[in-house]
Length: 149
Image: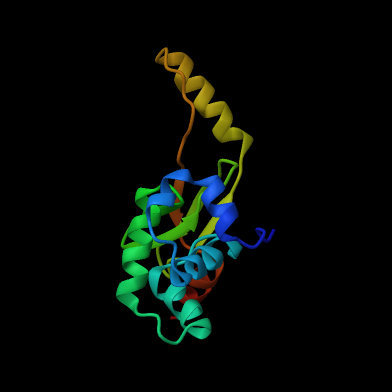
């Protein structure tokens, strides 16, 4: 599912707090790349993709922009073990499978997690409004590579 192209007006309407920050063409490009991507990207992949469209972009600009986007709540700053990713905030809650071998991250949704949130919330008299689930293991490719060695 591709997200619609971000325009300056759409972004400012969606995030009024950004109105006080300069929305440069580089920041707009980075936001567009992140929102068009299904799943997560690490900073180097974001930089590589953005550099294809803007040769003047620096890696430090990408880091600063991602820090700003995270502070403003535009993107999630996700860490799985030693791997570090950024992703557009999604409207639906989703969960992650993280490969300990290659760092691949797979998003999934599950009714079981909803049931778990309800059960745990009821057990502790707690109104659970959001949850994060990260399951770690090894993807099929890494398991096959391990068998060959």
